[in-house]
Length: 282
Image (cartoon, rainbow, N blue to C red; front, side):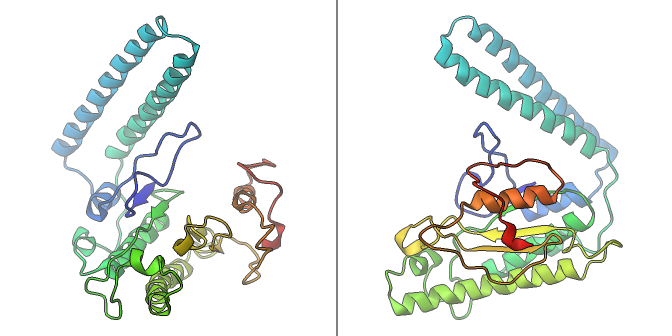
């Protein structure tokens, strides 16, 4: 499941580099996960999905005809489209199975996620929704994109997030930037506490969930993408607190990803640009 409040097209891609569709609406996600549709609604949705299958069938036929008239270079582009159609077909099949499936009952209502006064409240609502999705096993993997925030309605914030992050070493802007991060980590800490307080019989939800928080910039003011700040919680790791590495000869982040993948008992020894497994986690 991909959720995105950031001002970008996507935060997840498949192995072919195609963006994974994402959701921006909390209420729509709540209805999808926890509200049973009426027989009429289910019938309309199934008709819509069948129409989607028909469109994909037409596209597949057109690609077969195109393949006869293009060169090798264009065939690779057609292969990418074919892969996208295949993935869209799988998503439609998953949606068909989900539409008629009885939804789990949760101690929440759609209205709980509808409105918010500022981004701090919005972020808290998103975390609560994510916790419910994991708790009910409605999904096993979630990516959640946090975008730049504004200072509207948030006490203590006097300038926008973007302005504060591109501080140029200005002490006043750095202080504002720290306030943004403090509020973000307050909500993130509450989210981790919610997971830790959710008992799953074989441990807490936090112990059974790997939670990774990171950024695409190590120094936003300089737009530097090296030495990224990274926070990993839960997942059954023997966490050792803060780990600092050589800033000049740092590990690729893929080393951490490889360690996380192996935690799922997936036996691979390489991922992306990884050079080894990040063993310092324990």
